Length: 238
Image (tube, rainbow, N blue to C red; front, side):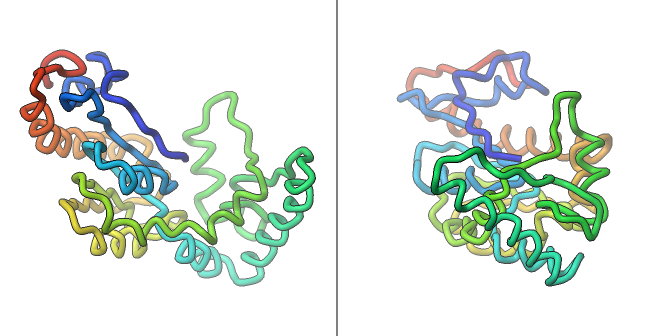
């Protein structure tokens, strides 16, 4: 669930829904789409780079403190302590450049894992491919304490689409809503009556993709119009 930074030049006309045709280039060739699922890298990149043309934050985790509190809510403070103690065991090896300590990414409630909500294990299994391994670097849990992308929302000048699953136990909806209020630029918020992993499958997947394409058609058309060369990344918009 990392961030994805896609140069417009890399998107072709066969991209889902004709997406490539929607990504216009600036005259300097730097028109890009930034999309994030889960983590907050897209917001940080867009805050640092004014050339970013659009940001789509799908079920984003923009406030690590809220996320940690969510663990204590759906489990308890003991669960939060156990997960972080497991992560701390990875620190000495990290300092000595030893092989990292691994922990499960998803597990059943009560088990030690980065995510142990009611739907975490079943949710990951529903979207995982054949090569997926249920493990993560334990040290990654500690990085969540410093995940404060929410504090940089007011630095993003490009249009932002924030998509929220309102029954999300992994990326707390209140954090995404609070981030939207902090933004100073053009922000759109779409909420869906589903859980975190539902958004990757079936009806909710199709609906979120449709909303993304609608967002890009409206906002990136201005990028294409502003390009002196008139160069685009693909064929005609769908």
